[in-house]
Image (cartoon, rainbow, N blue to C red; front, side):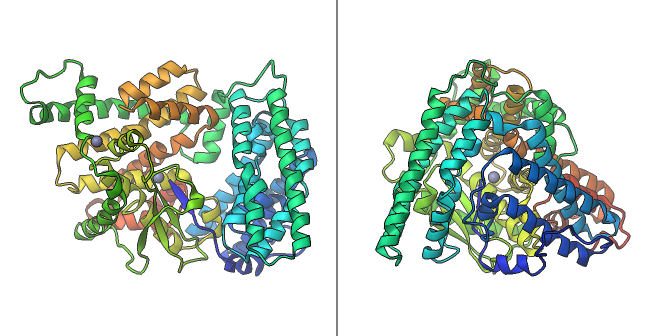
Length: 591
Ligand code: ZN
Ligand code: ZN
């Protein structure tokens, strides 16, 4: 999991240096990288104007005060914009661009086509009431310290003016909504309401805005909160005899996979590969478990069923874990250990000038996950990278125990490899070295997660954990989660997997606890495709490495592969592959 820190104000300056005031199309005969860079700026400027909420949460704050009404005209404007941009893009000769700009070009094109597809084919504005939730942007404006508090509060106030009209329009647009997403919308809107009702007023008290003005601002917050509550009441009372299924269906699923994952394979192909991978993992896990059995169970007879054999060994190994109050310090101790290992084995160069700081998770991140990364954006190169660790203080004993069994002595190390070294943290340090706004905004989730998963296996393959079979078994269990995420998502959305079959897959074949499996079912019923990113990215990266090994033959070096792969930034693996496997002709070296 990754959380990006906001970009600093310098982003705005960088943006506007090249933007055109009239919002017109890019250069007509621009066939070189300089012209393309200018065009990129006007492209983003135009996009932000049409999508202020996305602008704000991407770190661009010119339109913070705007809330656009989600009506037909707004979607029409967006469609026209995408047509104009696709036309502008077609005027560039892609082959003359640098490898980095080629990737940007592809990302921009994909983004425009993806917006068209979402508006014209997916049409989730009709059936997903949760897509109207704007509280997240308000929370961002309030909690992220990118500008003085007074300025952010005034933008917050201005933006609230359209809340009643915004939700009235939402009610007009929604037809036969998905029940699960309707319930989610009610929960999320009510859950976030305190941002408008309470947090805003609390922040006003800390500001130097005059009292009479504050009163007016609080009155608008009250009206806004009422409008949001009214929307949830409307959703609850909605007569919905023919709701859309939460399952996306095969055709929409494949298309969504194509735009969001940007893989060179179809979703079905990746699903088949995941099924194969699961089979392989089960075989290997059974083999290791058999070997470990006498060490942990003595002369007790080995279970005949291999899945229950694996489950019992995993269960026993999971009891090795730290105490709740040692959780953060255990992570702090692991970071230097991982750093030393990566250096000793010469896996990838680490930049000592960008240290990783382990910290207690800040309050506003409201501890859902135990650990996450916050990394600086490309315009905040001097910013810190944080490894946020949630405190287990105050957790009920049983909940803490179950959490610590999940993040036991083995998997806690894998977690730190995945999130930090050489996983997400190292990848983002590399991504920031060749800053591209396009890549940081449209960064490919499958590449980012794929690298983190790949780095786990790379560490073990190079002897991390002293080649202990216990470590390998627990990694396989951890890795099965990525693999089964893909199987689950595909089977549920593109086929018709029942809840019972889904829970069986997760608990019996992926060795998850009931609570985790229930949580995953909930997630798959309100999201789609995102769960594919871990395994798809991992698989494509492994395939690319095999192909690269062949290409380089005896010149192949793991470290060189890793660093070259990372040098393209957070781009889809298939585009990195094109660049890395291209014939060296001097053109593709420029990145
Ligand atoms: Zn991750
Ligand atoms: Zn325990």
